[in-house]
Amino acid sequence: MIERRIWLVIAAVLAVGGAIQLPWAPSRFGGVFFLALAVGCAGEWLMLRLRDRHKAFRVLSVVGRVLFGLFLVSFIAIQGIIMHGMQPDPEAADAEYLLVLGARVNPDGQPSAALAARLDTAFDFIQEHPEITAILCGGQGSNEPCTEAQAMYDYLVNKGMDAGRLLLEDQSRNTIENIENACALIGDGHRTAVVTSDYHLARARVLMERGGLDACGIPAPTPYPGQWVAVRCREYCSVLGLMLTGRWA
Image 1 (tube, one colour):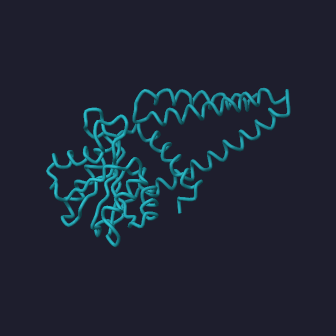
Image 2: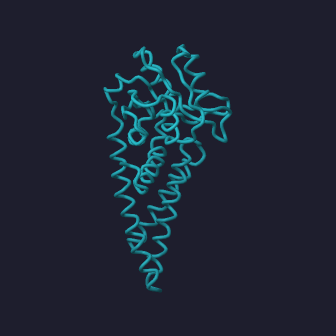
Image 3: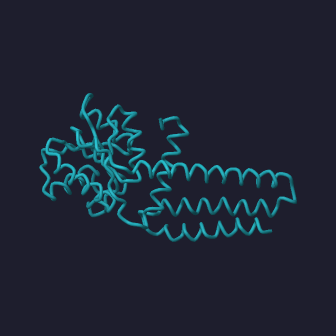
């Protein structure tokens, strides 16, 4: 009885947390993530309630607890990787090219808060290192009025950046393509660094290494506290996907 109540309480808490995040686009992934967990916990409650009726329910209840335990262990471990990866690399100061990874563009063509944070971080770094050239990475999503690279270019130029120091990579749809296309632009043998959101930096480093680039990272802050949970849930899924497909190391 007590065990069933615990699972029901967990499901309710997760459902409420998911419902709160759903209306706001930047945190929507976190809402879906929490609601999926809530469904799983509710399913475990149901299996425990029915386990005396048939052996299959007892087996499923055990499987559910094992899967939830594995999820918790993997989630905590990957969050540790994400947190450890947030530190900046001093070697970035020696880079010849700076990759600035894209993020969502608002319907009015302005960078989202997350993208603006990356651009502000990149702007300061570029101003401090006059020999570096920036590659602005990001194609156009189905809900975006222009490519992310173009929105990034306009934002930086309006801030006073020399347009001659900016290259546009506007065909990519994800981080892997960002890096592959940037490699094609700059060729081999050049020192590189990357600016992206702090929570995304660990994965960006791994993908840059796999792409043959230097993995020096410069973290941009996550703009809203309300985003912190959602982006870390999304990053957990992305990192886990790379690990399960053998592309993490």
